[in-house]
Image 1 (tube, rainbow, N blue to C red):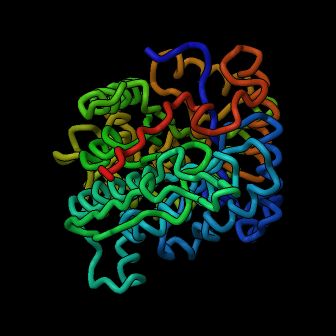
Image 2: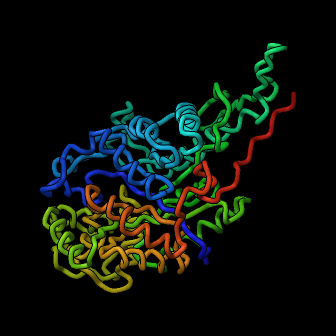
Length: 445
C-alpha cells in the first residue's frame, strides 16, 4: 500500500491533446504544437498550480498518422529548455531514445539542462518502437526489442557513470594558488562494451540533483528489468486497478532484487483526463471528441496490437479474452498497452469501438471523464488502493483540459491533503521523494 500523505502530479504537454484529432474542434489552433509561446503559457498555468513537472513525449521519425493529426512536434529538449527559463520551480520530463542517441551526448545535454534549470531536469528513457526511425539514422533495419533493451542497459550504465564521474569536491577555485580543480577527483569511465566505447568524463560536474531524474517507460520484460536497475520513476499504463497494483509491486520487487530500496523507485500512472465544471459538460465534450476520430483506422490499430487478424472484428463485434492469442502483444506494438487492454477484456468482453473510446482514441491509457470532483475522487481512490505514487495527467484536449485540471481539480486535491499547496523543495528529485544518487567510486590515484 502506498503512502496516504500525498502524491506527485505531472502534466503532459502533448498538443493538441491525447485525443490526437482534437485539432479539428473549432476552438483549437491546429498549429499550436509549433508555437513556443503556447507552451510557455501552459508551463505558467502548471507552475501556478504547483504541478511537480510537465512531460513531453517524442519520437525520432514522422509517423504515418500525420495524415490525420499532428506528429510529436518540436524537439522537446530544445523547446523545454527554452520554456524552463520562464519558470522557477516547475520540473521538465523530456523523452529521449536510447536506440537513436549516443550516451555521451545525452548525458551531457541533460546534465547541462539540470544546471540551467537549477535541478529540475528529468529524462524519460524509451527504446523507440517505430521501425521508420532506422532509416533516419543510416540503419538498414530497426533493431528488435531484445537488442534495443540490451543496448538500453549498457546505455544507462554509461550515462550514470558519466554523471557520477566528478566527485562533489572536485572543483576548488582557489584564486591564491591558481588551482581550479583536482583532476584526481575527476575520473574517466573507460567503458568498453557490446555497443559503446566511452572514455569520459563530462566537461562539467554534476548538476544540483546529482543526476537528472531518470524516468523509464516500457512494460515489456526488458523494460521492467531496466526499471528495476536504473529508474527513479516509471511511467506506466493501466486500465484496471488490479493491473496497476500488480505492476507497482513487480517494479518494487525488481528494484529490491537489484539491491535498491523499493521506495527508491516511484510509479507514475498515465491517465487521460477530460474534465469540466459539470459531468454533463464533460460528457458533451467527450461526444464532440468522439466525432473527430477515424474510428475504423483506430480500431484496426487496437485489434492489431492485441494480435488479432486484420478484418476479423468489426467496430461493434464483441471481443472476449478467449479470442486473444497467447502472448502479451503483437510484434512492433507496445507490450504495456497490450497487457493493459487484455486486463480490461478479462473483466468483460468489449467491442473495438468501446476499446477505442475507453483508451482516448486508441492511446492505450485509461480515459477519465467527469466533473472536477469526480476526477479528484477517482485519482484519490486509485492512489489509496496502492496503484501508484502519483499520476501523469494527459489532457484529452490540451487547449481545455490542461487548464481545467490545474484550476478545477488541483485545488480539490490540495484541500484533501493529497497534493502540495506550494513547492516543497527546489529540485525535482527532492519533490518526488527520491534519494540522492549513488556517486561512483573514484579510481585509485
